[in-house]
Image 1 (cartoon, rainbow, N blue to C red):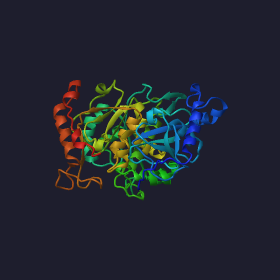
Image 2: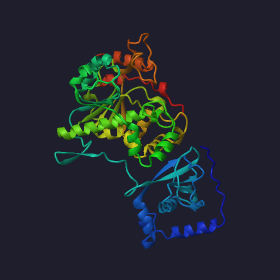
Image 3: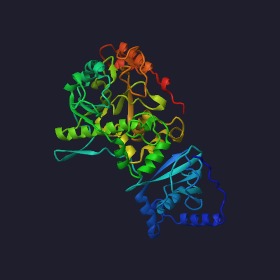
Image 4: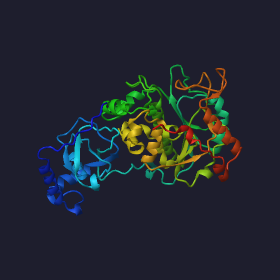
Length: 469
């Protein structure tokens, strides 16, 4: 869309308006925050209870959708005005300080009935429904076990839950190394979820030695598109306007039937759905067994493990999501494999929830910035993962990668090419730098890990994935 910077020329009576607001500000009682004391401040205090506010620097709400004339007010007064106006979704003003000039002085503010963000030397504030003060990141949900509520991530738990998701691709080639180098190390309860296609075996795909670790497997005829629209409030506006305007494969939807109106390449939305379903399966198993897991992992069927996964004793004691090195495409963070303390699972596996609660774009704007979100080529799935983790203050630790994505000319996704093989059935690799990196690390690790090897075998290849914005 085109963007024209609103002109902030003084309006007739602006001085009188400003004087009226300054007089009102002088009557505020500091003990009551930014609201006037007594009955005069009742409306203001009610608004403070109903809404929280999210500020975005280097962000301007585009011209149009104005509510009345620009106002010369402070930021706190603008929040009160916007809070009192049901159609107001936010406001914007020129400058760099979210609190206004001199960190609190009056500024010409534009109230808006529609919120969007374009890169400009302005500040935008968005009104968010709330039940109290500005909301902190949501606490993890609770699971009731034998009638006693326990907080997820309380430090209690036992064992590892591992999600393997999506189409069962290359397992006939990868299962032996997966069992030897991943499953025998972590000894997980494995959860499988994926789509059921016409012609698929009723009993599900061949799982080889993996079947000995599986506690729950579900292959479903999916209607993800209908679920996306039915679960998202104001779906037409949020999905077809807000989300579709943000470029990048973070919103890839060609896996849907039919795809969304932009027919964006990739299967990101189906990936988020699979993660959401696996989290539900884990929660159900925890309730059934009467105990939380201590760790949750996520990985892929088509990972070829060329050395053992780092053992839990080297990862314990650090409250972070453990992610292998490499594949941090375009400034994001590798989303192919992870192992984390149980309390972080709702965040890592929570992309679907962010989408369907209309918060995905806001989270990316707050963490990645307007230039990345509104620019080209836009966020990818790795950037969306990074945004979720940063928004919830989840730390990330890295271990040297010892696995790479394998493929054949017959068995690969439609969005990728398979390299390193000249025949239809011999395995190759999807990304040469990933394969070479994992091979070098495996030679360093050999057959076992130590604290020393966690450092000595690590190599920084981040320069291969740098963002262009």
